[in-house]
Length: 220
Image (cartoon, rainbow, N blue to C red; front, side, top):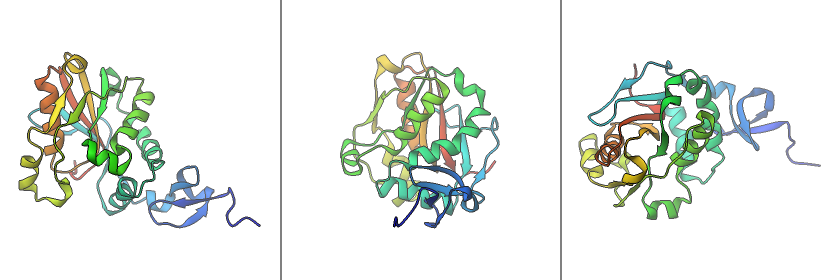
């Protein structure tokens, strides 16, 4: 007798094992159930958030809340890479309604420092960005990296976050010069990390940089 069958899936938000018919998205035994997804509050496509000095504008699929926070935390710190595909599938509807994204030259992901990448085993933003690149038919490029292993932004006050990310990114001029770039990260909070990375991309010759995130703490 099998303990579980193929007709049930574990929700990564509430931990319940439920019938597949109750899942909003699922892949390889994990998913997000319809009840939990009802707590995800989608943003309106083609209504971008205000950018920064170096970012033209920011597009985010969902508003950041406790349900998304829990799932992202599990994705980043519990080693389940497959959650990246759940997030990608959640973003597809939003992305398909933002056709302007297809006009960009490359998509890149917020980089992790090599020490953090070694400890975590993967860059959570990069896995989602690679899926997005295939969906948008835009090349993915590893064109920027972190030169310093900074403190985790979520542990800092808003006033400390800009200083923590200042001058920590290095972009490859040959890859970014003259390019219109989508910079992907999982969450936009104070925008300081995104702006610092975009600033370096612009410094190395990027023509335009916009940010795309799964979630954003700001409401339209």
